[in-house]
Length: 196
Image (tube, rainbow, N blue to C red):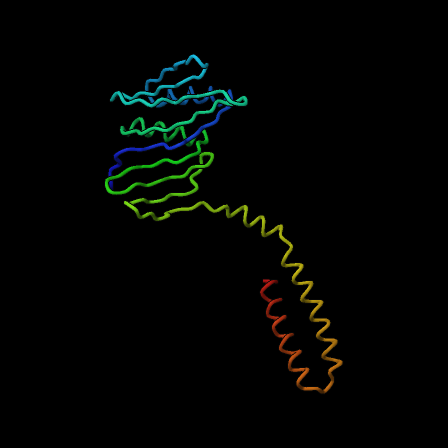
């Protein structure tokens, strides 16, 4: 298994309410990582997390529209601090790109509100999408709510009725009845597909 060399957070953000900020502070203590708070002249708060190796990460929080917003771009190396920041990022619905760097390649994770939406493997100039989020439940709900199939079925049924009237009127004209029968057969096949 490849050993991770570093983890980068690129233009990552976390947004928290007052209650979530209290939870964030309590959550930090569970990781057994020393933390301190710096209050800047602008009123901004910077949470500094540091592990036993001395590596630290600065999480600047600014108050915007009643929320605490952290905009984060950093590179982490030690596993203990990397794991703590990863858990915080997921628990508090982080968004942005997280690059996990290995020897020879990078795994790039695109997060949206705490959920991975895309994983891409990058090696040199080549990139391969490994995973892409699909809102299957939302797509199924959209299809369920759609009534396009019902509208097409009604239209086909009207066309079939017209064709049956034309077939009766055609009488013994083989050319007309063959043409009408072929169109009826195609409509019948389409009805079968739509009703399935």
